[in-house]
Image 1 (tube, helix red, strand yellow):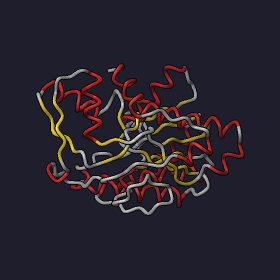
Image 2 (cartoon, rainbow, N blue to C red):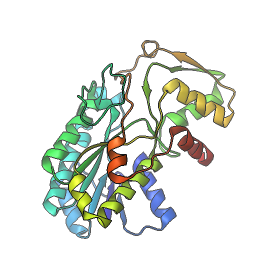
Image 3 (cartoon, helix red, strand yellow):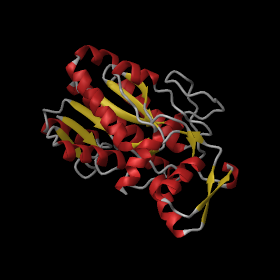
Image 4 (cartoon, one colour):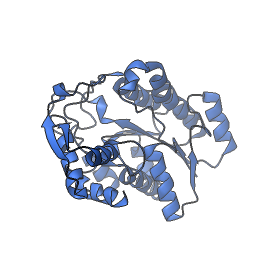
Length: 290
């Protein structure tokens, strides 16, 4: 049995969709009502209620980047305390944990794709709590926690950049989008499918289990800016909205965004043989759904 926490979130919903499409009976989907990860006693009780849990995938997170600046207590509770609680109980039960983190932990003027060993320099509450959360999980369950840092996540459901661009593109003749932030979009179903593929490979080859702990990168392939991402959305959907490039300084936000957050995925590809689609191919698939 694989426990998926945060099943009502964007990534969690993708696991639910995959379970439905593939007829997977071994995924236990728990939303925040069923399992409050910020309550350690509740986490332990949940694992005791379901003793057949063999893996835990933590999709629960506080992801409101700007709101976190004025809601630090709530962000820390979910992103740090919740991650620690899950890791501690997983360690007690000898259950491997997959925990997701973010490209926001990198915030520098580096211009080559980040490797997992590169220095981190988070800015803002969201970024700092996500880094603290992954560190807490790794400390609590050092041999059984796999932290996957990802970037620019979107899907056909939930609130995300793609759906916002579609809505605004249908409402307005023109949009201004920043061009000086560079990264890679990640299609959530690709991330979910890759996670399940890795778990399957570890299950089939137990020797891989000794290699899973630590930090990994996953995003789609390729590099783009938010401006080019928006342009691609309008072009594929044939929306007449004109997209204009602007600098980040012209669109101030409460939380700073990393200027460059392209992730090097060589480690996850070489270790687990994961094949990663290009961001534009996955965007096409998402827009077909929408």
